[in-house]
Length: 265
Image 1: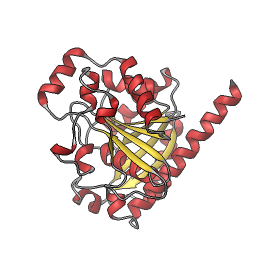
Image 2 (image 1 turned 135 degrees about the horizontal axis):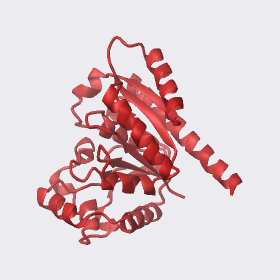
Image 3 (image 1 turned 90 degrees about the horizontal axis):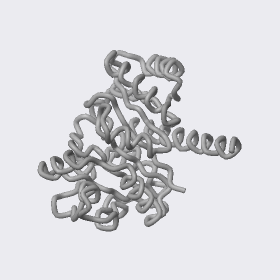
Image 4 (image 1 turned 60 degrees about the vertical axis):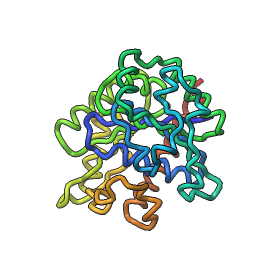
């Protein structure tokens, strides 16, 4: 059964979309992975995946507006990105047309339609995971994604406003009985990573969440300017190693949570 993982941040500028793309590409090395761009008012994943205007025939936005089906939208990135070892990466882009964004804002996004889209894409492409990159903040789309996901990865900087908002997101996720995984990103230079990990673990315990990973401020990742998937370009980098560790930790814990629920039921 496909596991849906939503990646969210309370504020913009946390590196959420970059982490989503690199996490998805890492998981896709050994699993069949879908990626959905649910940042409907500010999509960016298509840029990281190197897609041009002509590569996108239809979008998630078109599905939600009733103008397309999932089969019209999904783009197989497996060969394009050089993914092998039996895995695969399948992408559902969002529209970057202002008129489409405005139309969707007026009509709204229905939970049953989103759930149906997740199910159809998961079954059609035999996906193990779907990564959903959400819009920052607390909005209808965010709440919808949270209600439909199996786990929520919360990306935060070590910043008072970010951390306060992350605590709010954890409380919101608890109302849906969804497990949350705290990820600290862009740890400032001069802060030892072991100290950041310690803080992250303490915060996760305080927030009744799980700690996933702490990422240093990586100048080489920043300088990439979202032009490509960094872990595929630089597979031996320290960032790629940490993303791999995070992916392994995340899938292991999601599996353990699933087994616990089976026993409980």
